[in-house]
Length: 479
Image (cartoon, rainbow, N blue to C red; front, side, top):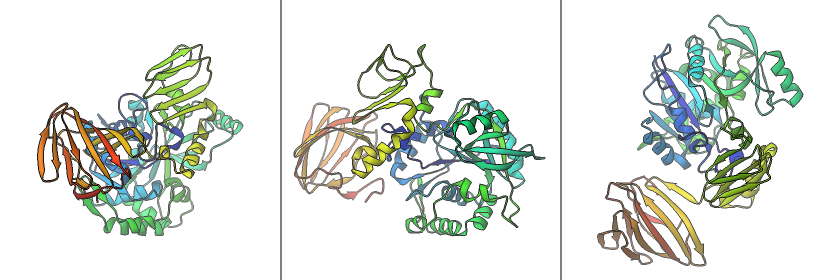
């Protein structure tokens, strides 16, 4: 029997726009410390010395849109994955956990289910709470972890604790929605309530039994999607048609809140209190609360200057941001968008994202810098009939063998060595050398070296969209 980490990495983090985007959400960002939130989550059980050994690698469930960067981030910190299960569409956490349970059903481990976008400051406290929850999970309960509150927080749901159980956990008396300020203060004063963390522990067989009993349509759609799926390199692709037909619901609503009234099921829900410096970093004000501050309560990341400013958070990615006379502000600067907000209104950033989506603005879904399995590119300039990109290709990687109907390209090598296929010829280009790819020519760019290859690409033509690509060969299985 093992403790199997399961990382749910499907959220979009709209309230942390413009850093978090649909195709590059907050769990892929290093918002706190040097590791991304996904990487930190994958390492959260390192050194665990509890009742069960930890499985060598996690199961990760994520959106297929950012599958390559997910795999690369795990690889870059030496953590790997047992499975990276790809969701063809978002269906919330209950179907995601069901796919993970199906992935490990043969071994039937105790699954520790962790959202990829949480911050845990106290790993010892986290691991102690996890170990305390194992007996209940081994006995067939579904365990959730409730955060001991340190303030009257209106942004979280709460769990009201019931009686102590023999296994060391507590019964769940009720799940409570996000309260108003007065109610939150009453919850805090009573000592009976915990924040609902979204962390769970359950045996795979227990979860599958619960979902089949309480949500048969969901269980059936997930089982069909899993059975008709296929492995693709690092990834497990479930059947899209079957999964899209699956009902969408959270673990709490689909299962946890229904356990007490589920006649004949015989599965209990329980909660283990946790004090571990937890935050779900749901919005910019939450990040300000947990970040290191200067003597005036300011938080700065990047090139930032403060003058006569207090309690302000600034993230600067690309330029100097200078602040004068600010109080309680949030400023987030990226190459293609800048957010300026009052710190007490950061929950409303999601309304900006909704407006961007309604206007079909690219800033809602992607950054100017786009990650690909071979590296990344940054569209640094564009105009009528031209576009300029900075392209970085990882050592040993290559782009697809491709052709464009509507554009020609000029490539200039600024760092490293490029292997270029241009029509019938394949040749090497060194630094400061260039080549011209005529419209309609089959071509490929590869990096045969041990250092990153960097080029400047100038595109010219009547249409410059990313969908003007005809691929003939591709290492990464893209059409």
